Length: 241
Image 1: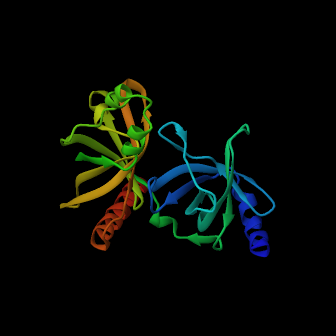
Image 2: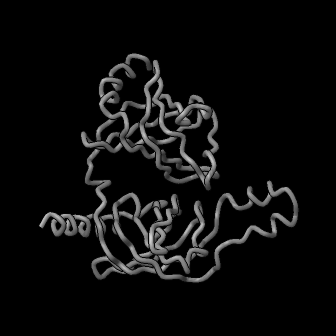
């Protein structure tokens, strides 16, 4: 795909430094991971190596995933395959090879608008917890690994898009949240109560005991997507005044 990459290079050169999202659709590490476009090789794309639970995300050579690049020039996506990792650089990189052409997609699908909606969440489990337990050095170490309680807890939605939501919680309920954990979210939008299943992809501690959480959906039905799209449009108009 060298000739195809030369065409993509013209576009990618202007996107260096842009936010990138890597989406894995199956397997143990299924989910969306935040990265950035850092370098271009002869026929490869270098992105900041994503992390998972404070460590570099384990990825297999030739594994295919979706790449989404969000820039001031637009939103672009392509299917890519893992070529190699370069973890000893100043910026650890994951080198990717294009599998499909880089295409521009509608930004509206990913527009994120601020909101303030109360919701409740419930921990469903973690695909990777058994792997953690299996790799614990001693039985005592595995016993120290604790999972969030199986009970509902309150959250506040700070922003929303068709790809995921931002959540704010107080420090005193931080023990309910596990990066990489799957959750059921009960939320009410436009007088419609809906259940959403997704995964916590990032946890950031902010000032004054507030924790910011990135939550990516596993998938949403078309009926719910339409309600969300309508709500996002309304919020956009309100923000613009």
